[in-house]
Length: 414
Length: 199
Picture (cartoon, each protein chain N blue to C red):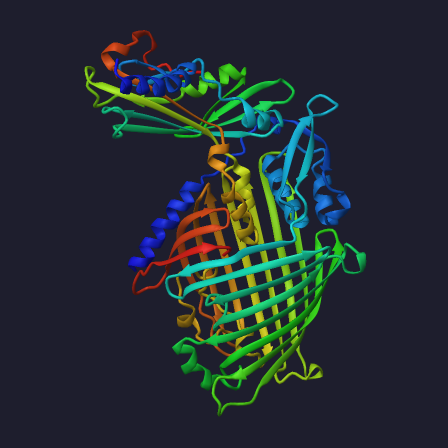
């Protein structure tokens, strides 16, 4: 507990030190006349990003949107910096926007995509290094994650990505390889032998190879199709031999951002994913896993409201890593996932409503995770915290009849 | 005059020359201490370039009062201002962020600078009118893009972080420090300006 308080203090001071950069700019009353990219050919950025740049034309100037676009151009081009200028337009009350690309494309990058402390589940972290040559990106990383699944997985991963397969901007390829060692909570170890008829036994090593093709369907829609070849080594020498869970996968995603004429901004992200493991792929497990989610964010000035709903169902016998878990750093915050269901469930619904004012946030989570044939029990949690960019510090309270026990969560990208 | 005093004088003259170029003055309205620095022009260089490019620029300021020649802090007031430049009207707009945000627009650069300084007000409560005190005004421009480059959607970008720290960002960012003192409230009383903070 002392560590948690110390962490809160350090993190809180970091958050406050960052401070928000307000987008108070008198030029927001002017209309964007044109948008240009300087220092790089427009063809080097994706069609989707070019469309978003074009959409600025005819709209009122929105500095936060320009900063967001500059960040995304920089990430796509892998250059040192992308700045933006606003110049007086050719017609009165109009302005021109120029994105300036600075520096040559960087061929390597090191990042920390996950860094998280959960008072009940401990630390999770990942570090990645990426090398880019032309359209080819090769990323290697190390990870130890005790948050997302019923297992804690630690190990290495590597992926190859080509966002313009065959020169087409609409088609991309990703090849992912992972090798993880597992650690299991005591409650999961005790419960697993009793559940062998509807899930896998616990395993000590899990390896995965997953090729995926992504296709931009036009408009806000993106389709991914692929396959996953998971191989699990049993935890006990006397257990079953190496097992496999080989599945076909498909996912449809939609992303829509709407800027209103006022200060409001709507952002909608949604998707449906299906994984179907079949004997055709020589899988020991046969199942289908459906998962859908919708995240809507409305921002107006310093206020923001986030609504995030998701649901999932599994038919058949799926291994432990496929089962749904709630009580993580982003779902039913404050609850211990091993108290809810140490093996995860094959049915799940969850909803989060979050209100943010500047860096302050308050949230309400509700959801249920259960297995077929069992009753679904809805749980609720509330919490408050601080959020700045990707960093967040929250104290969450699971709503129980018996007692109030705060749980601290801090980190980024959750 | 001893050799030590000559050396001391040689060291002090350039410093005092810097401060005399933009001196800090203060007055007391009976409740609050106000500051003025008519020769301080901070809308120059990179911040001005950023403003003329249609972007906003943020300035952080800190007014510190000490009763022992800047050794310890008696009172400190931080302040934040966001400025922007109207590309068509060629006038500046300022918003003070601390407390109840206030904005003014259609200002010249000198008027915008003066408005920021007028907004830096410190309560004189608890300070004996006959007691000596010293004032220090610190002002610096911030670069919000550095933060955005390090913290992106994929998490912390270590490569970018190394680049930022390998430069000299703080010294490269424009900053100004002005000092005044020793002063006494009894000496800087200005009865006509009581409570005036308007722009």
